[in-house]
Length: 449
Image (cartoon, rainbow, N blue to C red):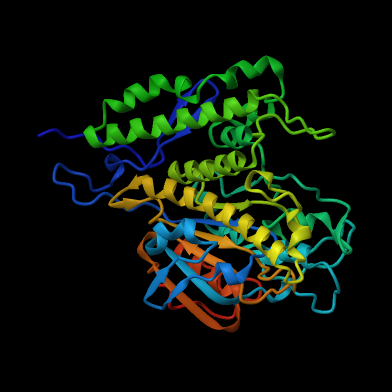
């Protein structure tokens, strides 16, 4: 009978100027023995994915009830294979995305109120104020359990100064994550820098722009920790070795994709200066950021992440799917069928990207389940119908089982004006947080389990 020495859950592989976190292995179980029962299920992760211009709700709504769900609508059909892994939630409202006496600016309020449930102070100056977002409230409570308290991702940098929407600061349109009511958490859009944040030291990250140090970053992080990895393999059984090999393969592939993106020729668009490492194709960029979120969760680099697919009021066009007009311009569709059809194509494009991400999470085994089982990933917006700037009955999906605390595969329909923040505090409970009230939350959603 072979016994393998236990390995601490916080073990990292170290090399020259880098440290690499590990996935959850069976040998990390505190009760492991030759007759070990089930491996630990793993920590619960929480992610928030924001899209900016609402949805064509007639094509969004799935079918089902409190006991079943079928993601069979035109927009959500790419997610049909995950119907058992998702909750669809109807009737949730973000009241403070509404004007409430402040006039225009629904898009800025959409982003800033999305995770805060607070009314942004209308200003285009430096005196911005909204509220603490759910991700940052959770990070303040349990973020010390990981190397990174939270991770903020995006595809468009945006600005934190100047006016962007009807008298609202650009900070409101560019951020969904707020550490304090006046401090937004800047998102990272460069995949290489996200990767280095997870695996590089602070001094390495500070030196990234130093040309003399770039040769180090061209090396694989796997090469840098190879000696430590070889020592670790001696302590592992067969199943853990296979899991480690699969993990290393995914890291290597991700590194290669990031390197290819960084080496690609600049996008041939006049007067556009893209940062190094950002892919020229938007779909590839979105997929890379999703993959980095998955890697951050897999390595327990962080358990809390937010991802802005686009800034509020985004007016990107999508010629790759046959949509040449700008997204925001189309969103004021006035019920014109051609514009609504175009928007639905955009909605479906992002649903496809989200489906790919869920597939990634579901493919990663963890304990007796998957990484998706141990996650809660909210996908949605604080606008429903952008033509009317509605902020009630929002398009909201919650993927994952929260470590077995959520009964997925159902369509839950709530009373009108149920605060979205009721869902948020319910999610933080499953993270082990002690948050009683967040924004305009009034109660827990007790039917998630």
